[in-house]
Length: 298
Image 1 (cartoon, helix red, strand yellow):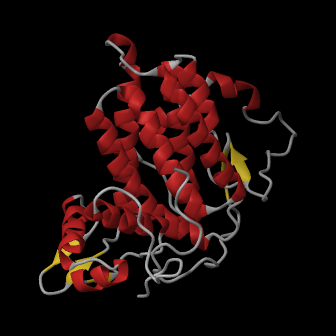
Image 2 (cartoon, helix red, strand yellow; image 1 turned 90 degrees about the vertical axis):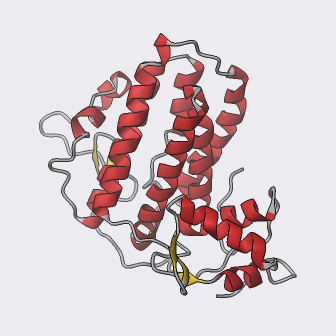
């Protein structure tokens, strides 16, 4: 495992404490799929990669282990966990039920949301949309995470926002390797971040709720298509498929019409593209912290 970065041969770190910086850098590597499930490493190895002492490296690894993002193994160090399809269904179910319920109840409570924050949220939405449409997965992962972290502020509940952020990290840890294996990603991933900002600015909580459900539906159907999995019996499908009035004009095609197509030949179900052909991995790379497209958008 080699260190990376300009000049010094180590990953560039610019955030708060060394402990947080290392944890954030490793988390981003895991989310992008560059630090794959099953990868094992020691405190010494991480300390050498980032050019720090053993103490902040150990603290970062312990923090990630406490969050369920690493597995601590006695005498073996730390291992990246593997999330399977059943884990992913649980993650999506938790996300869907929590966000839907929280958004349904926004109108019933005092709402101290700072509406000036939508300026920053709009910038994050634009960055995530560009990355999704261009198919830049590494960039999209960081942009998407930070967009949803900021969007969660509308809930005015830091505990819910933090839990949703934790679930999203695990979602990307599962999804990113499969998306890489799909090949060309331009136009494949969800890109309606700006629509959600519009609804937040309009104080349209119900519209925002429906659009978040659409995002979760899009995500689960995309992964199910890539992995040839069925969603029969998935408990929240009826909730996620609740129609969005804004999408009514683009409902099912009239009899005799062809099904709508995505730019890359995917059949669109509602607005959810399912790739017809899953190509073998083109984006496989070894773990090199800080290399490749930056998982940013910050």
